[in-house]
Amino acid sequence: MTQQPPNMNLSVDEALERILQRVPVLEPVSVPLSQAFGLILAEEVRSPADLPGWDNSAVDGFAVRSEDFATGEALLEVVGEAYAGRIPDLSVASGQALRITTGAPMPIFRSLRGRPFASRPAPRCRQAPMPP
Image 1 (tube, rainbow, N blue to C red):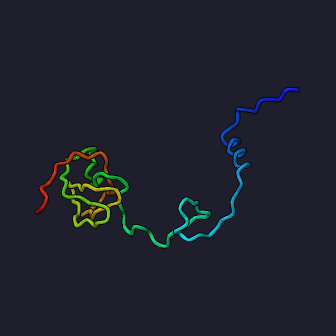
Image 2 (image 1 turned 135 degrees about the vertical axis):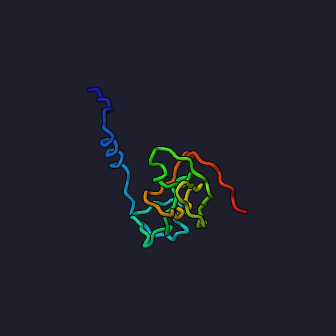
Image 3 (image 1 turned 180 degrees about the horizontal axis):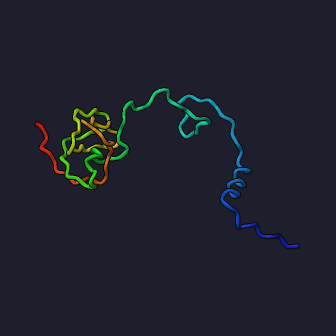
């Protein structure tokens, strides 16, 4: 009697199930953090506090006011920059934008009616003279 070739028409779920049936499940272990490199958490870990404690930018771009783009486009004045690790000392008014890097705190938006957002690529902007 000849041997049948394996069924090659497995769904992803069936293939995953077959693989996982052959992989042993390890018991969780406790190790000091200094020895945990390369290990995978056995359970979810949650922080009791939000970190960072402020809204921050997820991308490099420009912090702008959504209401400035009510017509679809706007010419904005870039009034400064915001970097991760520093609280921006500038606020953004109507017609202004702030160059912002990933992780930087979002600036204060004066008289904001719409939702602030970080924009990429750059909106049409002109660079304001930077204070000395």
